[in-house]
Length: 157
Length: 135
Image (cartoon, rainbow over all chains, first blue to last red; front, side, top):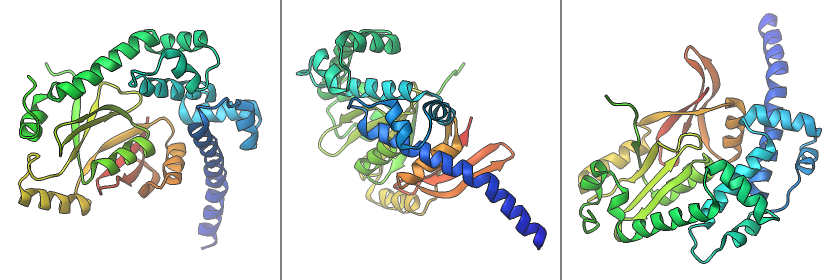
């Protein structure tokens, strides 16, 4: 009995800090998820989660595989892609909308990540959107289209 | 020679609710969201690091490959938790477990060491269940 209790106590000692640390890291990550469009500062987030900058970056990378900065950039780029589906938005508008202060920096970062310029990517996204609206069946493999959608949409191919 | 799988389906009870679960909670990325007439929608999502795999969130509805009767039966089976559709992977299962719990995802098993690796189990908003594994 006493052995079981000691084992439980030892397990608690090992497990509790890990879960507690991850909860703080998760809170910091969720903060980035909510505020990535704003000019957020990694030092500030680390402070909010009561970590030193170095410790925060190390633990964040351990949890998510990316540094907080890399993660912030990936969120902004994903949002940029979503905004590109709006033909009324220019690259400059999108850039400021997602927290960048310079179109040049945004273009460099975007091109580095996707291997194409934001302008070219927006053209592709708008073309896909056009096809999705005008000929939706072209986006669906036949094994799904034949069975699921053949009666919903006039054949597009 | 088959080299890869590019599309798989998960049957869901409600596509709007599934969108919220798979995109806003699990963090998957929308690949295609196309209306297919007034009552149908082709909705596919991809894991962040696996953009070539489209997971189709298929609605269970009469006329969409189902009759009234088979749709009703299928919905009941999904709600009852009959289907385990697959394994999602993460680099850090403890962090992902804490994050998904904070977002309201229902786990039926906390991260546990198994013969094949560390695993947790969770349910989607329809009742389908999945393993979460660490790689």
